[in-house]
Image (cartoon, rainbow, N blue to C red; front, side, top):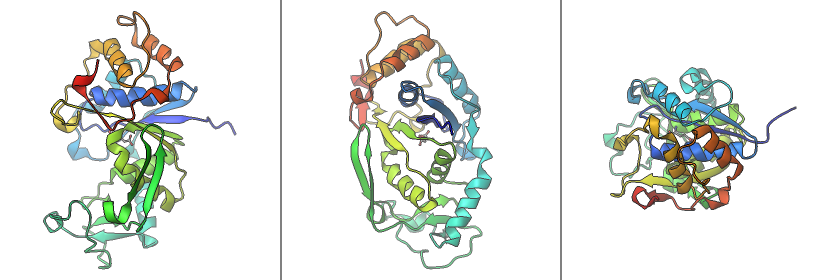
Length: 295
Ligand code: GLU
């Protein structure tokens, strides 16, 4: 068997264009893989067509190419993976680990997002219901390569969570766990906004008998007013003609060295240099970084 020791991935959601925060995450996952001659995969997390921005998928691919990122193999779209998600939802239902929930949004107001368990023992039929996973009354934790130890008590802090929505769409938590395992991902490198999703993912991995990857969460870039730099905030898309300067800025954000006089070079050359000088220990171990503080 010739299994690579390192398989990383970038997994954008096409609900918007790539912005500076996504560039920082893509760059970190790319360099962390290339620094050890690992593979780097691209997965389009297009699970939610109503929230998809028309043209975003091709814009994301164009931007990645313009910024010098080359992925291994064919890009995978989660929209082609529904049969696998459906099989695992069935599996969890059959084992009594998941159940149908008919609660309306209104009924759940006032519970701070922690499901109060109304449908837990109700035995509702599956049709027109959301599917929730029964969480364990225990903590799930891991040691992040940058952020250090992190854990959550799933019962108290998260509650039973949705793995398939009432409209039939599959939840991010389910798709990400199934696909990371299916693609053999050994190292998940992504933004710290997903730190608090990780315990749910560890729990799903345990229930589905899947291996647990290593995790590295890079600081989330926030606006001076505290807003997350993200799709919901309509962050400006990355300009195609600013690849090298913005990659340099992203490298500095990640605490990495930058070559002398690189400002006008080709992005591919910069990425190659950066992969040879990559040191994940230099990444600031903060959950957020304000954009204004960036050099
Ligand atoms: N698709 C997610 C996003 O764009 C990232 C998923 C992940 O890296 O686990 O926010």
